[in-house]
Every structure is written in C-alpha cells, then in structure tokens.
Image (tube, rainbow, N blue to C red; front, top):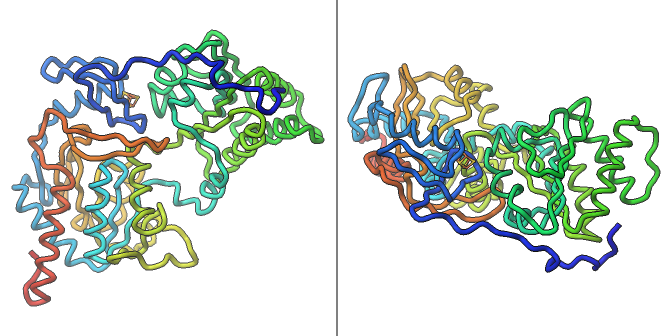
Length: 441
Ligand code: SF4
C-alpha cells in the first residue's frame, strides 16, 4: 500500500485533449453535456457526437409538428399561452414538474409560476420516491470533476455501472485519453463493459447486481485490515484483485451509477473512498443522472437555493415553501397517483415512464406541456413547443458541478421555455390583479 504523502501529482503526465474545435456546440442529449460537437444541420452532418447526440440534432431538424395545440387542434402560440394560464389559474391543486431538461433560468421561471399559483413543485425524477436512501448515501462522499479523473486517475474502477448506456461518450472523453504512466481499468459487475477503455482492463464478474454491496464491505475490511468473516471465494478473489490494483495505483477513481434506490451500493463505495483518501488521492465519479435529464444537477441546485431542498416544494410560496410533512421530500409521481392534482405544468421532456403515468392519472385537459416536441396524437391539454435545449441561451450545471453556458444555436424559430413561462406568468399575475370578477386571462 502507498504510504501517506508518497504520491506526487506531478508524477502523472496527463495528455489533455485540445479545447473544443471551432464552431463547437453543446450537446444536451444526455447529462454529459459534450461541448466539442460540431453540427452541420443543412447537410445533416455531425462531428464528435455519439449516435444519441446526432439523433437528437437530426430529429430536431426534421420536426414538423405545430408550434402549439389546444385539445388536439393546432393553435396560435398566444392563444395557447392564454389557454394554459386560464386552466392553471382555474385549477385548485397544480403540480409544476419536469425541470431537468431546461436551463437554470427556465427552472427559475417555473418557480415563479408555481409561487404565483401556490402550486406543488417537484422535478420529474424518481430519486425522490426513495426518501432518505440516496441522500444518506451521499453524506460524506468525496467526488471530483471529470477532468480530474481524466488527468490524474491511473486506476479507474467501474463499480457496477457501464456509462455507455447513460453517458455514451464518458469513457471516450474522460477515461480513454492516455495518461503516463498508463491507466488501468477494472469493471465490477454482472456484465463486462461494452467498450473497455484500455488494454490493461479486467472484468470482475458478479452473480448479482447487489453482490457489489458485499464486495464493498469485504474490500473495506481488507483495506483496513479488519476481520472479513465468511465470504464466497469469488468475492474474496475479486476483493484481492481490487486491493492489489489499489496498492499499485497513485490515484483511484470509482465510477458509480447503477440503479441504487436505497443507496447501499453508493454507501459502500463512499466508505472505501474515504478510507483510501487518507493515504492517496481517491474519489468517486457518480454518473446516476436520470435519462432525459441533461440539467438535473442545475435543477437540483436552483431548487435547493430557493427552497432548501432539491426535491422542490409541496406548496411553493414567494420567498420559500410550505415545509413538507414530516420532512418528506416532494414526490411528483406520488402526488399525482394519490389523486391530489387537478392540473399539471410539465416543463421540458419527461422520462417516458412518468409521462405515461401522468397522462393516465389526471384530466388530460388540465395537462399543460412546454417541450420541444408535441407527441403524435396529442389530444386534450395545451401543448406549447419551445426551442430545443441546445438552441437555448442560458446556464446548465454538469453533474460534477461545472457550469456550462449555452450561447444559442442556429434555430430560433421557436420561443425559449423561459419566454413561454414568463408569458404564462404575466397572464396569471394580470388575472390575479383583476380579481375573481376579472376572470383569468
Ligand atoms: S455523450 Fe451525451 S452529450 Fe455527448 S454527444 Fe453523446 S448524447 Fe451528446
């Protein structure tokens, strides 16, 4: 094992890639927010984008749906804004949700609407359905910027998670770049990585996803030289391989991100990283962003700043929020399935599972959607198209805390989500000023 203070970062020789090429744009098709893609829309040609990113840009260019619909019929944007304000203002229990697929400025504008309506506010992710688990797991975690991994970590351990599915270019951009001395990688999990990032790569197979919890306990005991108890020979061998690799490393990164509703897997990694960090640079790279949530970190930050919790507010009011009962986080899905919502304002794309559930649970006429695309066969409700996130101007927060500025793309034919929210908000405020006799919008 390396002795404390024996590691000098200067012994590493990162070979950092050059900055983004000229004309590069930010891809917002996943939480990686790659800033080196070059898009030639007219020719349908894309450089430095994965298949998912190229699909997102290509789909946007091909979209032909109307700018707005009211109850299934194409409508003028102004009429749809008025209808949205009328329905939201006339509802008694409104939920404002989505939020992970818009800029921080968009989240703030959605908060303004929620506060004017006294609405519940909750991002559309499923983390909040497991109160406590993920949050507890994150206590005491040591994380680092993704560039830190790229430039320093000579041992990268993929802990039950292959980023190829969630953030397709993570390995290419942050693990595959050469390092001197060469980087070693290990994947722990039931299946090997789709695309191993180095020639010095090992897969340590597990029988079951949850076996990584036992493996973490065993590895920690091994690192701290504590009794290990009775364990399976396979886990014993995996722990020995990991321990030997850690002993030979100068800087260790653990990449996590598998579904972990109760936080047990994350908790195990956090304990290992904390133990290791007393003797060498060690950190975790959590990659657990939900799908269709490129700005989940930004939404969480904006909500925390405004309401003291990333889970939103059970009833948003200006300057704060009504405290959640018994400190439980707001759960968008739970509110809807409990039948406590009669109108919903969803901003940005929703994960398909939540989209289906929301649609099936409340009167469709009370559904107000602001998103870049209107689904085929959209019926009752008000749909307003905003421009794609990559065509917006504004601020995003990458999952590792780095701010990403969007400077606007090439297509401004649709309004921004912020502009649509501001227009709805303006109508609501005007209706309130008129009082009950003045009607809504
Ligand atoms: S990895 Fe994600 S952000 Fe990067 S190009 Fe692919 S979809 Fe876009």
